[in-house]
Image (cartoon, rainbow, N blue to C red; front, side, top):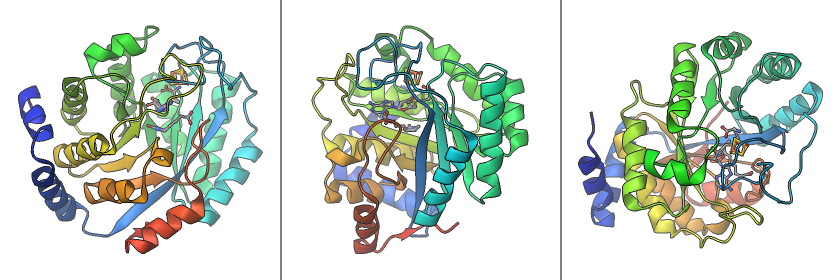
Length: 311
Ligand code: SAM
Ligand code: DTB
Ligand code: SF4
């Protein structure tokens, strides 16, 4: 088991020494110069009963995002087809739910998963808490991965979300694992947490057995109307440190440079990829916020001699 002290010493290393090690681990485990492109779609937006302080979709805050109807399967599959044609190999569907409830809405998600799989894409969903039975149904529909982020440390979690606990979060990850679906779990930096909080989150993720196959590292996108809407932007070098640590601690995982790229220079994004990020969200929208344009991302990879992962 990794200790907090070990992770903290890694995080505090001189930047170049941290980068050297991250690069070596990356090359040993992911020798191909490849970045996976994933497209996100919010299939049920807004009106969420949870109170995550960063989120536009929580019904607790007045934001520009209101509750919307769930999308139809056909609309979702049309978007998935566009994503595939544009070069994505993974399609991630999000719903602003506290938890999955059995019934027509969940059945619709199962149809979406079957449809996305029939297009030859990896399918991922993020739907809040799930039971093992529900995760088994998702697995049977063909789901590859379930995203459920720890977001931050156990300690800091309490000041970010009051409507559920860290243990609820860990239980869902166990249920997903028990159903044989791969785990996608990471977090956000820039929410007023300390470096110890960041290290604690990394330690918890890396000590999961088996480790998550996919680790998204988000930089907070401060959204108007949310309690964290006025926080200052994170220093891109902090994001690079976080990614380098994730790469070293979870050598086989796909580390995803996730929300917050619109505030990063091309150079900062490439440094994050050098440090071990080998996936980005592709397409000009995340769930409710904007993401860099596709042509700029293609140019970025091309200029650096990186390839988009083939389907
Ligand atoms: N409702 C589901 C849940 O929370 O598990 C799924 C959707 S939720 C929007 C997925 C993840 O997006 C969150 O766990 C959080 O890490 C990330 N996220 C949401 N809003 C964000 C923001 N403003 N900035 C950065 N990351 C954000
Ligand atoms: C993750 O860690 N980041 C993605 C994905 N998992 C679902 C979501 C980012 C959302 C950013 C805020 C928004 O667009 O609403
Ligand atoms: Fe709801 Fe997920 Fe947003 Fe939290 S992060 S308010 S659970 S949609």
